[in-house]
Length: 205
Image 1 (cartoon, rainbow, N blue to C red):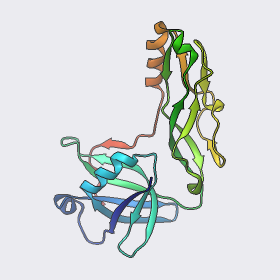
Image 2 (tube, rainbow, N blue to C red; image 1 turned 180 degrees about the vertical axis):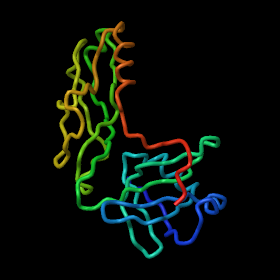
Image 3 (cartoon, rainbow, N blue to C red; image 1 turned 30 degrees about the horizontal axis):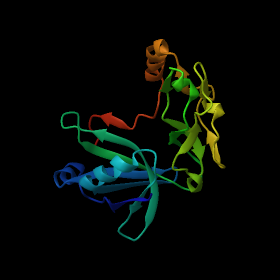
Image 4 (tube, rainbow, N blue to C red; image 1 turned 30 degrees about the vertical axis):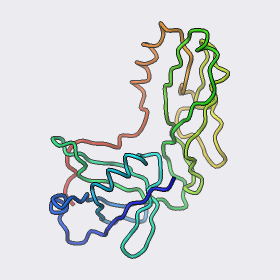
């Protein structure tokens, strides 16, 4: 699915003035680009709820340009929990590190035996060309019995996609009921995705 969002160059407009008009100040950047922009807050909220950090958002610029990007950071107003600033990372031909969602398929025999399926990660960090970004990566769990697990290195990655996280990281496991709390605690301690949402207003440009 394609996600698009109208973006406008920011020249003399002040961030706070834009916010009062229902706009969201931001920046689009990469190694060779750094340009101030703004988007409609309501439209951003709608698109970001669907695309999140996992999918490319194409910015539609006033000059007709189409800029493929990923949301790298959203700063929130601490009191109102409303976006105050957004960073769009502009994709180029260079590979990019990003999180791809996982889709678990099949039925684990261990669950039929009374075990509990524990999804430790629901996305994985990969390095991939912008032209080869998959919508998701399938994880076949049909061979998992109680005590079995799959690690990042066990996943079948599409062509052009390379793992960019610890290959020994547990992705999914079938555990006895008594082990669920222990594994859940480990999952909570592990960094499942980058810190995208931050509280507090971004420093004014």
